[in-house]
Length: 328
Image (tube, rainbow, N blue to C red; front, side):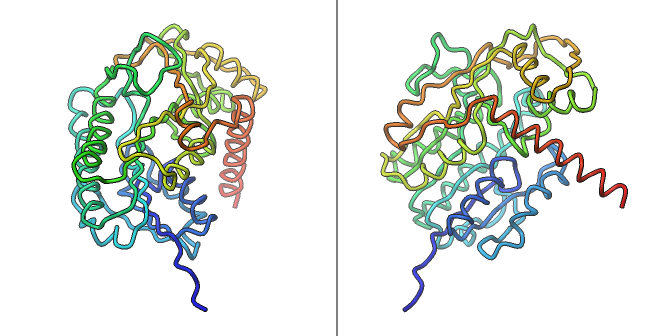
C-alpha cells in the first residue's frame, strides 16, 4: 500500500524566532516543510542561521534562501496545502524616516506577491502573521478584533496594509486567509532587540537595560509555544475566509514590574538606563481571545513566570555553549 501524502507547508521567515519554532513543530507533526528566508541583517544573520540548526538535517524540511519581493514564488508554492507567512521587517523604532521603504517592501509588496502566487497555485490556506500594532492606542482593554484600527507607527501601518491585502484576496477571490494579530511573543530564540531578551541579557551580563519612558507602559506577552499552537490551528481550522484573530497570552504587565520579574527569574539585579519615550510606542496592549477560543479552540497555556524561566534557561544554555566553543 502506498503511504498517504504528507501535508506540505511553506513557512516564510523560517529563520526567525517564531518561524523556526513553527517549522520544527510542523516537521514533528509529519508535515513536509519548505522554509523560505532572505536572511535580512535586521539582526545578526549568524543568529538566524543558528535558529535553523535543528531543522537542516530533518528529512521533512527544505530551506530556500530567497527574497519574496523578487523571486519566482509559484514553484516554491507548488503542491502546498498551507502557507504560513511570517516573513517581514519587524520593529517599531526603525520604521520611521528613510527606513519606511524597507518596511513597505518587506511587509506589503512581499505579502501581495505571495498572495498572488498562492492564488495561482490554488493553495488551500494562507495564514498571515499580523501584529497587535495594528490597533495603536485604543479606548478599552482587552481589545477585541472589532476595535477601531489606528496604528501608532509606520510599522503598524505596513502590518495593517498587509492584513487588508489578505482580506481583499479573500473577498475578491475566495482565498482562505487567516490573519493572526500576535501580541509581543517571547521565549527561547526571541529576537535580540526585544525587551525580554535584552532584560535577561542585562541581568546576566550586568549591562544596563535601556528603559524607554517611565516604565508604566503595559504590554501583553505571549509565550512562543502558545503562538505556534495557534498558528498551526489556524492552518487547518474550518473558519471563514478572511478571518482575523488575536493571539494574546493574557500576561499584561507594566514594564517596571517586568524588570523586577526578569531580575527575579535570573536571580540577579537589572541595572536600568532611563531613556526618552520613543515615537510609535503605545501606552498599552492587551488582546481579547474569546474569538480564537470559539473558532480555533485555542487559549494561552503558559503564564509569564513559567515562560520567563524557560527563556532564562535558554539564555544560560546558549551562553554556556558559547563559552565551551571559545575554550575549544
